[in-house]
Length: 314
Image (cartoon, rainbow, N blue to C red; front, side, top):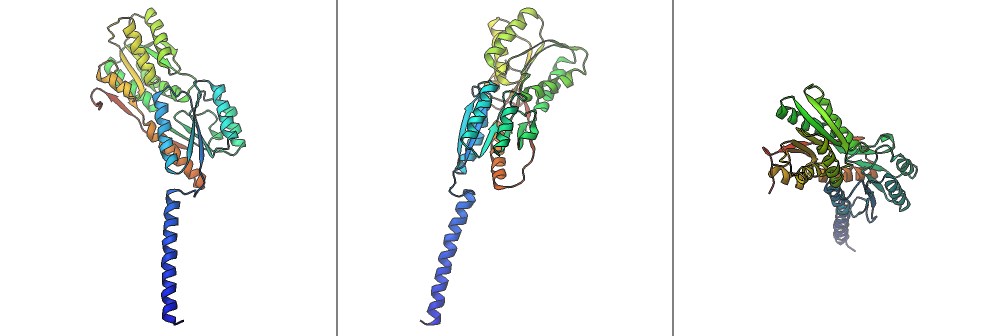
């Protein structure tokens, strides 16, 4: 066979090889783990909260784009149930566990179990006490959220007034928010905390506890709520008592319902978080971990105060 023909044949084979290689590399760029279908597990403190739903959506979008599957579980504010859910995800041999914990200290047995099984844990939204047992924590600047609410309130009260706090003392995110709020208002001797109770971040419970507070406190200038569902419960309590409420009410989340209440003049402000972004960052961080890329131990996502002056709502 003439050398010229052999050279042409070799060139054709080379072109075909490069074409196949290009397709293969393109596939692996989109699906870096090849044909392996990754399995991710997530357990949330309460899927009745729109915030947790958006966290899940943010994770799911990234996971499914990488040919993965997400198993999402609702702990329903029960730490024992959440520990069992983590054990179940370990038994299913998921590649990564996303954790939005009910109890920042009580969840430790689940963290130990995941560590023993060598399954990475990415904490989302609410940090855990034993953070040496997790690979990464992705959360909003929860402390700063409380600070933003307090600074806005201090300006409105001019440094004097009666304040109610509705908190969630077993969730680190809630603890940080209230701590940020208190660290600011304690600088003003004229601002008094006249009552504080827990709502576990739930609208119905917030409505009940606020109702009892209203019965014993006739003069309330402001209510600081650890999240938006709590703030909505507080608004409902004032309405149920047929009180023409002039108190300033603050929430944290930036939920659609809260924005609507700001538009109606019933909620003073909320601090907007970015649950979709947090979920997306957490999922991409998990993928990096699985690829063997070094990841950050803590990733903080900025927050923003939303009130009537900067409200954007349809």
